[in-house]
Length: 238
Image 1: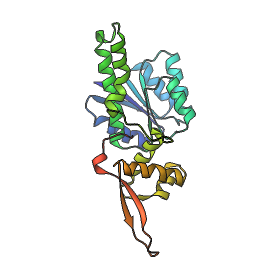
Image 2 (image 1 turned 120 degrees about the horizontal axis):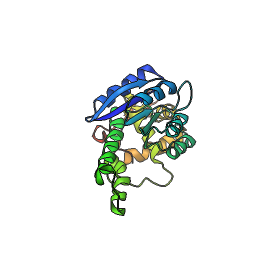
Image 3 (image 1 turned 60 degrees about the vertical axis):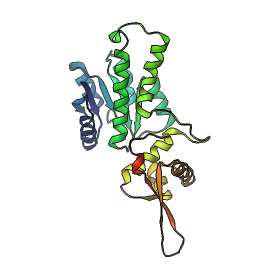
Image 4 (image 1 turned 90 degrees about the horizontal axis):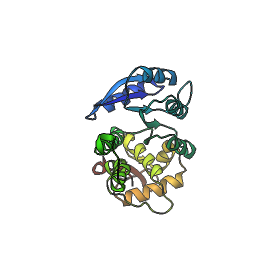
């Protein structure tokens, strides 16, 4: 069983994330923390395999907490679960050793794929001398590829000028909406320009990831509305 500490300043979000974790076989939530101080105090006293960590905490940032964890010798792995999507934060999270980065808002499917990828990584590590032996190049490649293989399967190349994180943000927006959205609505919820949103929506619709419908108004010109295709649920972008 993989023991998880959920860290989020929003009590309701922490509860939702904990409920999501509990639905994934092999994982259990051992506690919730709403500040960096609470998280560190729990880590000092209890065993934790994985921390689901928000970046925006009231006493310090999640990235600062990760750095302090490493300085204090806490070995728990970290998956960032945050609304912070600026490249600087993502890059720093990688440098500090975060294994995954999940952008809010997200669906249960989005979090489940990250957790399943993490479980696959642990299995790959345990498969090399019980996690304590030496690894040859083939085994090292298998370990480093475990997260990506388990989470997304065979990779597909995005068109030039497109990025997977941006496409994933649009997926999260459409998945969480519960109804078709216009390009303007998608852009507003994703924090993107309308032209950027339209470019990604066109690509995702052509790739079969989203469905397109038309809404006719008084002007006679139909409005394009987009929804995440049900048959694409559980698949990652690209």
